[in-house]
Image (cartoon, rainbow, N blue to C red; front, side):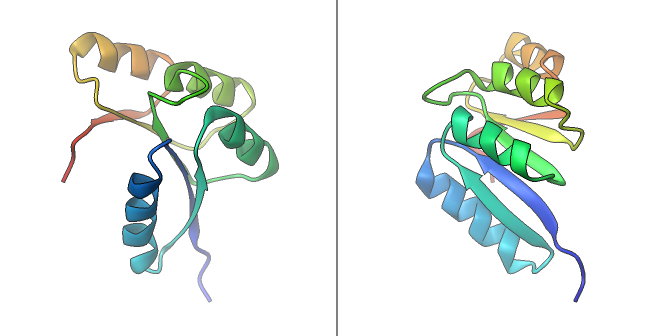
Length: 109
């Protein structure tokens, strides 16, 4: 059996997390893990290494950009994609400056 790529989905919108996880798992290439807030996400990255983190900016307990910085400080080396409804150039720059590898705006198709 081939090794599955591990993806951590961090978003407070449970429906969105489940929809993304369902699509990713359907390809049979990915194993998805979920966190609904920053504290749960930090706990997960301390316990496990992931191949990709998809991280929402607007979390209930912390700003996703600050969480991204904390993840990088904690040694997270995998790509981090920021997922957000904030689509200004300034927001994108802040996201990338926080350590994210890419910035995807909602809604997306």
